[in-house]
Length: 132
Image (cartoon, rainbow, N blue to C red; front, top):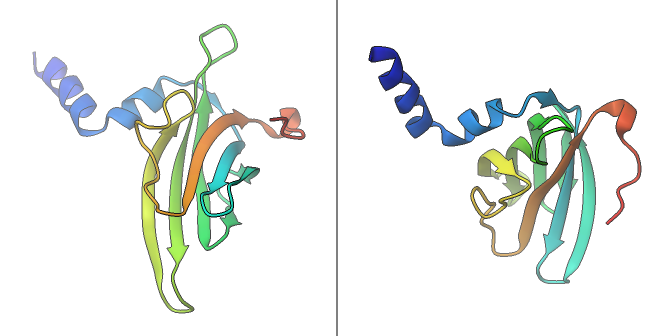
């Protein structure tokens, strides 16, 4: 009974982590889609796990990227840390958590000018040009 209570508690405390752990294929590269709401420009970014990429004043670091195996229904998720540079000395963290490709609204970046969402996770040997 205690084990069941701990499992239920872990799902309640970190639903994103529990879902992401069910995705068993580790990726080395997250494919992200970005939108600048002012210009209407949509762009794809490839972000290696553990490295930073920039989009306007945003710095995006992918900490983990996972996806389901090919025989399962498609799903990709990435753990992102997104910060915004306001000035030379001020940087604010604006998002930290799991984002899911199939449900971007579940855990979304809330920013008045920029949107970022996960498209896919890839490994280095399968990465190539993003077609969208």
